[in-house]
Length: 175
Image 1 (spheres, rainbow, N blue to C red):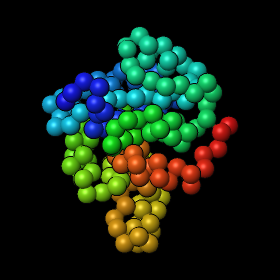
Image 2: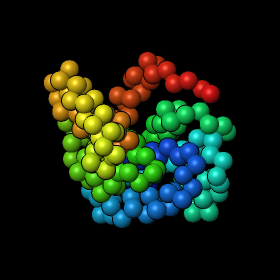
Image 3: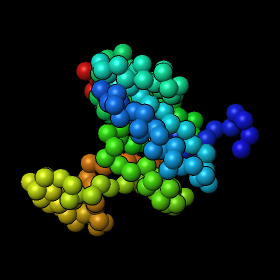
Image 4: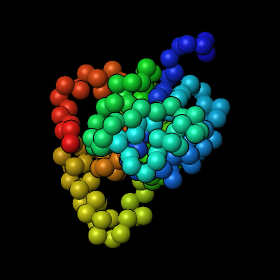
């Protein structure tokens, strides 16, 4: 790929007081995507953390943007997607609940779909949460006629253009 060309995928990582997870997640992403058949980069979006997360980004030379105050998860996602210059954007939570190795599998589906959603293993939840999420996913699946594995997934890959098309409809409150 020529220098200066946009990457194929920008991985946006919303961060709020996740200081201890930042470097391990970046290391896992680097390892998972070594030799990937597409180009990629990682963009951390600090949502007003107070735990020194910004110093971690600077110390390790990581690409990041910062909100001066906590504006919420959705606002961090919007900031990251707007800053991406790739065709596809991945959103992955910083708390290590998703395996970055799944990115390769999910990327195989992006030519066909506008959004591809990953899922956590629901059995990792306490039984009341497992039961509640199971019922919610079943009902949502029944309404839409498709299996829903993780209603609150923090791992998604989407076409940036599709996201931008619907940005005006997304009302994300600023605190």
